[in-house]
Image (cartoon, rainbow over all chains, first blue to last red; front, side):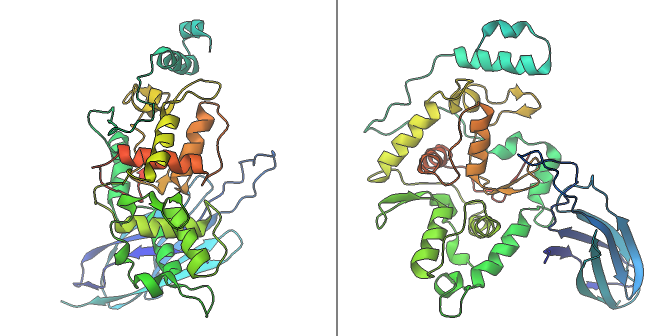
Length: 107
Length: 275
């Protein structure tokens, strides 16, 4: 199980631009490195990150082998309704790591 | 090492030239074990933090973006996890939050009267595991040991380092101090040639720091992961083409005591981010 850290505000005013930061533990092994015996270390990367805001895609990123280990992504959203923020990381084998945060939007 | 290499113009031979100059310098008579109070050769101690680029410092300073915090989080989970139902977890004795560990990293390595040995944080955690939890010790550099030591070290963030080197600890200290000033490896260099005599100068793309251990376990960008001080020491040994000891070896724990004493007054900044 991958470990994720998420920084997202719990409350926001309507229309406010909120800052979201995510960090996840992952080796992001490129597949181009060799071990001490000369054997190729198999590629093992996350390929996609998606943030869903009340089920609607709000932010999406494709990840490639050149992304460093433990990918850190920061982005902004406009808070327009209370609800759930869902964060999904998908690895190359289709395995999904999910985290959710509740967001309350009120004046 | 051949000194006529200094006429080369490539980056590599420039580095060799720098090392040759360093190797040719006289070693001060500080490596000798003595009964009197040891003196620190550096006039002003600077954390490894001061030698990092601004963006690396910013990464360390942001408690969220600092990737070492992933290990601190995992360490907190392990802290509460007993492993088996019959045995205590770390939190059973030391409290849920781990706040009771505040200051511990600032005074380790420390002499342990029971085992009559010098223990660093990693050694203390493993000692506790064997004695109080009846579990097998974690392998040095394992994800679990890194996580727990990062969790413990993080509690002391911002506290000034102050280790105890008198009494039975003195033998270990003296041996660590000798190690620091002894030449080794094909390069025939001692720790102090880089980390005292050439501090601030460039070694290829790297600025030589004072070799202060304040931020370990640290996230090194080159490793793309968190690593212990001993991993860093092995890396230094390989750099001067010396046979490294295994991580956790008594030689490294002794050196760790000397390095930590040398860093006294500096603040713990684990988990640090280093180049």
